[in-house]
Length: 385
Image (cartoon, rainbow, N blue to C red; front, side, top):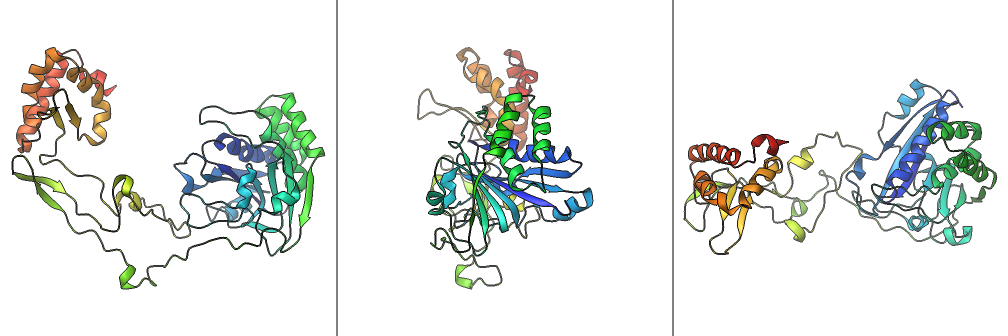
């Protein structure tokens, strides 16, 4: 082998995550049995995965470290030699969560590349869904019902090793069946899985798909303007500065409320989603920190709100902690749940009520509250643990 090979595994998020990982990892392990090198990784833009939303894993195999580094200069391969589709319904095309428009399942395939599909359908039925391509490629079927499982469980039906055996048959220059068997033996220590890989190797069904064959429908797509092409009428204004706001009950002013962007809505009324351009992304994380619509309001005294709601008997609030509430919640919940501690808690937390504005007094009250919690049996050590 005198060049690197790129393989993509297209799968349904969460439900086939472990399956895709086994395939990409198995490819690299098998390559190592022949003195080759490689890397297995998931697509950056798929994290966090959504249930059933198309996602990808990649494997790159190279004859040496230098060739591998050259292939990894761009994080996600733009062209691949093998596409593995582990759910035949995605033959009609996929739309990942961070992408607008439909991507043909064979979109990244090099000329004469290999498209492997797990399916019980025939070649003609699959080609009715697969979009046409200007160059020829080989379509192979691994006879199986698409394998689905959950996040914490894995349906070990040998789909992973059967695909490894199929790849060894279709691309022998990249991987031999002997290397695949050695990797399976070492990784899974299962002779039956070794036999499944060998049987899949021997029973490969494939056809060469000529240019223009398949679904001639043009995939729907969106043309997104770059910042140089945007007209003034379609630009999104920056968010103006926010400021203090008036408490509706006391009439006092304090805290901080960010201004809103009219193009973006909060909560379930959101009408737009971000699109990440992975060609130019430098992973600075500013798209997460500087959300187009600010998500958090700050309480007037910058402290959480604790205590009963007078208008609704029996309702108590414990909100406004940001991430700190997670570690404090066991102790606070224990205090709020025991009426006999209500008096001590109410006095100690008086300055934390929504009508209190002095941050100095709030800080003192916070300290008194922690002391009260400790005397009540729910120590801070337990809460922090």
